[in-house]
Image 1 (cartoon, helix red, strand yellow):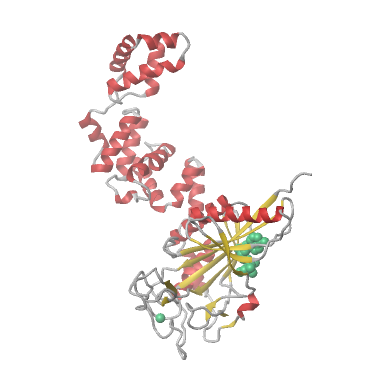
Image 2 (cartoon, rainbow, N blue to C red):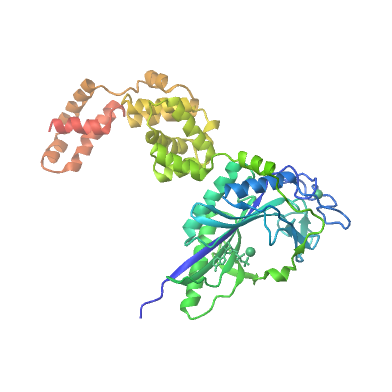
Length: 476
Ligand code: ADP
Ligand code: ZN
Ligand code: MG
């Protein structure tokens, strides 16, 4: 009997810390690593008798996110109390949204968005060993600085089918949020946190299988690995005739092991009820218009424009669009080239050579290379004034010292060897490499490499490999 093939089904829940000036329901400033418990007040400490007030900037950011994700905005949404006990939650409940979220039914790329809602973050537990402050090995401290930070939770529909696409989609979401400027979206620092829901079903089945939830993975690599590990674990259980338990899981990045945190809680476990101390959110037409106007060209649209209008390869279009600062540099260089440089060639130089020379994650705008200099360099390559290898040398000089590429070429004598000069060098090299010439004539095409190499050495990389080959072949 043929083995059943299983199809993975994945849905993501993403928590985004908003970059507002103050917390969700009080006037405390957001904390970025300050002394513990210095960004607190009676409201975010949950003292009795205090009253929360909704942060207008958080609502605005929430509306922008909803609109950017193509959602319908609720004409009126309300807050609920989600009740549970944990030491990082002094009130005994989290203020969140429940049956009427701020926004719902959207789409980003190929994935539908189920809902977008506002809530507050919990405080942070500092476990023994993580800080020198704690005296007992069993104790943990609570730092309330993070408590009450505004969060937007984004819940996708279960539209993803493998771990790599889940990570890729999350990259698109992160780029979109970053472009909106509503969050630092830093996974290591926890301003973007992702839970992955995973289930399997027999391929071809329409029905969803029982899912598990992998909590709080803090890098793209771990999300991908965690999902793959969970798919493998579930497949093992199903093939062994077992059943999947609905539970919340932890993926240990060091060992690769998956362990159970708790059996899955149901909504009724939280005793959700409407928050009586907060008024409903009723966005006015003016607020919606303002949010809409604040949305710039988003990465998915920019990538489509780069691929469609500029003819860039998909991967490069995405790289340039997902890293706004690189895309901006590229477009500035394209404008500086004023039609004299071809968009795909410029994209190659930007994505491959420039980024490699600057180092991973660098912002080209902060380097000594100006957009005009890069455009000038690529223009000289296209006009065949310099060879590719000479251009790389010039780029290295631009990265180190800045300057004008044409001036560098002139000063260093990097201009392309002209045909007469090159022909002479080729003839000399062929005379010196008589062996190689014989081999090529006898049908060993690869032997031409030795002759090309000799020419390149002689011209110090100022010749074009293709042209050298042509000149050699003409003389064979
Ligand atoms: P819960 O009530 O357990 O929170 P939801 O229906 O609210 O479940 O969905 C939470 C997340 O899990 C969403 O991202 C959703 O797309 C995803 N999800 C729901 N069912 C499945 C399933 N069977 N397999 C994988 N993901 C799922
Ligand atoms: Zn406060
Ligand atoms: Mg849910």
